[in-house]
Amino acid sequence: MIVTSSDDVVRLSGALVKNQWLTIKAAANLLLQSHPQGIIIDCGELTHVSEDGAKTFLDAIRDIQAAGARIVVCNLPAEVLLVIRTVPGVRSQLPIANSVEEARASLRLSGEAPKTEVGAPGDGGIVIPLLPGLDVDYALTISSRLARDLKVPLHIVYLLEVARHLPLSSPLGEEEAAAQSALALGTQLARKLNLAPNAHLERVRDAEEGLLQLLKTYQAGFVVLGAFAEPVDADRFHGLVDALLRRAPCNVLIGRRATAVIPSVPGARPRPRSIRPGWSASSMPNCSATTSDEWFGSITPPEPSRIVLVPAARWAISTAGEELAMPGMLWCSATQKRS
Image (cartoon, rainbow, N blue to C red; front, side, top):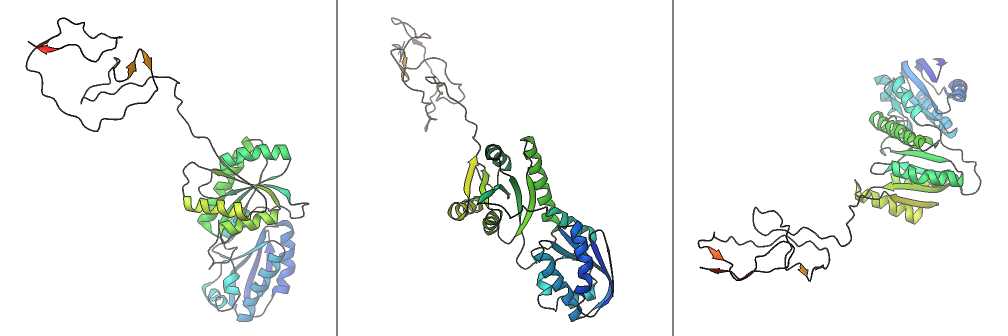
């Protein structure tokens, strides 16, 4: 077998018939010095792999993950992939990509997690999780004040849920593209508030449990959620809030932006509504609404529950002997009788 390396890629060619990790390890460690996120193993030129040779990948996964980095294998020939799937441990832990480009994009997205060598709990700063249905803009608005007052770092973290049947570090094309867009948007919003956040991705099996573990690892002082008045996924949002309020090892802040309210003028008189079909609201005072030229309250009467259609008048009427109703004066009816 021949081993070559360049940039962040270790290339294997020939037949892999026994565990060759010790041979590959020197080249891998050298690449990790300049690529701390992880390395790629390109198997496109492998011609044969035995069961013992497949254990090379298992040892590689253990050592590289112990160093806090990732490993992604790509360009596996079909016959090599069949052998790997028969080796216990390898088939369930080996992250596989279709190409070097796909593997590299996945590695670069991870970003750099904060160092864990911090002092007392809370020194890890403020964590803003990026999850569907959360108002990231408002969470950043709240966090900007905290970060400046307390002089602590700010972390924007996208929680990428990986299905349990896949290795945790598996490349996920569409999901990772969505994560990259969310992180870029969060960083852009933070910079508008004069913040320099540490934006990165965390792979988790479950968002709630993953966030709780992340807060412990970072020794965070605050976790900040921005909520909408109408959550997109109310059940999931309430479950996340409940888990944080009961189990989070740090302060929990949940904020909701104020909704727009149309103010009412104290003492304003509402327009009365006509109960006749096709008629606009009357502009004249009504005896049922006013008494002694005083207005008591600003309650708009409800829509009528029943409307009776009255036939058109067939006789003329007169109002002789009484003053006609005029604008500005109280009235109920004038004396009206048919001639």
